[in-house]
Image 1 (cartoon, rainbow, N blue to C red):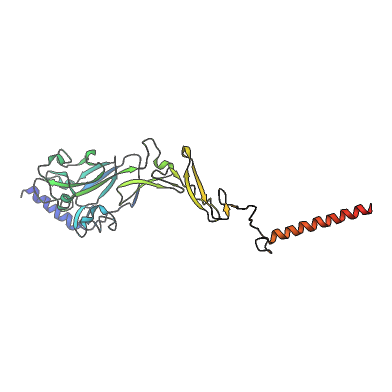
Image 2 (cartoon, rainbow, N blue to C red):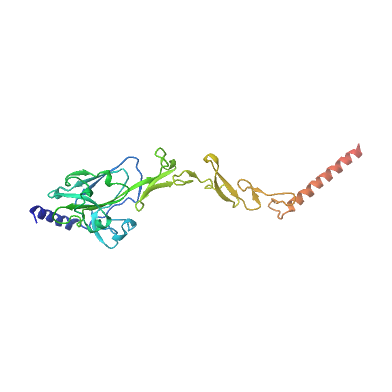
Length: 304
């Protein structure tokens, strides 16, 4: 083993003894899509940002289903990163790791877990030179999906197994009908939960649909008297609704009572009940009024 490798090994042991297992990754459970790209800087170091168990300190209560195969496995790694398509990723290497030629390689999920590098796959190296200082990751390695990067070196201790590996999930958004359209039609937010693979619209009520482009005309309950409301889309995108009324109610909003020549419904005063009593009462009242009025007129005729 060369002197440089011995120095690196000593530094690795010191770093890992003080930091391994002490980092808990902080996740933002819900993120909103940002119109302008963001820059993320990952410190490629064995201090401060190495977690050891994906389901304990590298994730959020095991709700990330992407890494189910890591259950009960100790996989030291840099805190996993979730970014959106178009964001910029910068790798900043620790000066203590610059004694030897190290680089980053894009590998499969299985190779990420086992720290297996393909020494012949130079086209999978992220950078054309050794990792020294600050390097910006080429967008070709940040397409939609989850990418796995490990540390590779010609000789010396396996820095990958000690935690110098990173998985990055790149998400796209489905919140616009077209590039010129407003996000979520201006009626919601373009969000992604930490366990989701994409961003999607979370609509404000009473709007709904993939892009919050639909309006729920039944949301405010236009159908009265227990009528059932059905959303309808008319011509030219106009939203409307239809009420399925329960007898004896009818009308646009189930407000009107059904009446015909053979049947009727009485709206009785508080002291009266029954289907016909009120109407009979009114009939008697009108008859008596006509009778009295006739008697009075007859008496006036006689007196004259």
